[in-house]
Amino acid sequence: MSFMENLTAKNKVITVGVEAVLRNPNQPRKIFEEAPLLELAESIRSCGIIQPLTVRKLNDNTYELIAGERRLKAAKLIGLKEVPVLVMNVNEDASALIALIENLQRKDLTFFEEAVSYDKLMREFAYTQDELAFKLGKKQSTIANKLRLLKLSDEIKARAIEFGLSERHCRALLRVESEEQRLKVLNTILQRNLNVAETELYIDRMLLEKASREKKEKRMIPLFKDIRIFSNTVKQAVEMMTKAGVSADSKKNETDDYIEYVIRIDKTRLPQSM
Image (cartoon, rainbow, N blue to C red):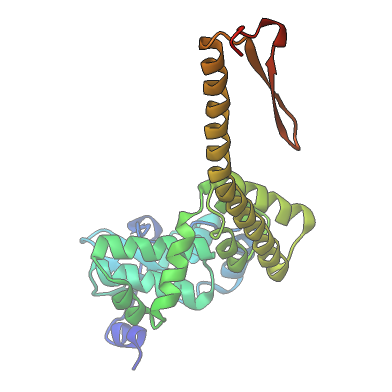
């Protein structure tokens, strides 16, 4: 018997008022598209609610929704006063898990909603990644990869959902370190309509160019240090000649290609001993 079957086996369906069913604070789904919701409402108007909502009892008058928020919303849209519910004897921990499992099985969640749910369950119920993976029947690496998506900014998450980017697009963006650069890459993905493979190749090239620039800059640091030493040596030599009575000065010319030093000594004003 499965986890869900084991929990529901001894519970019965009853009818309760729609106002007695409260929203689950651990409901992972945040986005409910209007058109499918209206279609469901019309279906319920014609055929009724075929699958009862799943709830847990809070007190004599109220119940907390575990699964079936779309059905509850649709029922309210058409003015139903009562709904059939399956009352389960579970605690908040199990309720949150069931709500997540139900949405995962229906594939109703965006990958960001899934990641937020994993994070919330781990924080509120002190699950490790391994424990959560076991309870959900998933690999620990799947949980870890989803949680990494939460490192992306709210702006990037919103635009990724708006333009229908895949989870792999978003994981590729995580390879880019700065928020500014991530936004630039995101704009390029959207403007060029890059698929996942093209996105990964674009980021590969960008990171390779960055590494090459950094390597070149690292090589230039000792060179600049040597040039500064040479510049100071020229300056000191001119100062020593000046102190010895020689009229001398230096001039530095710098272009993109070279640095030029010109030392000028006035022969007409050399000391007699020279």
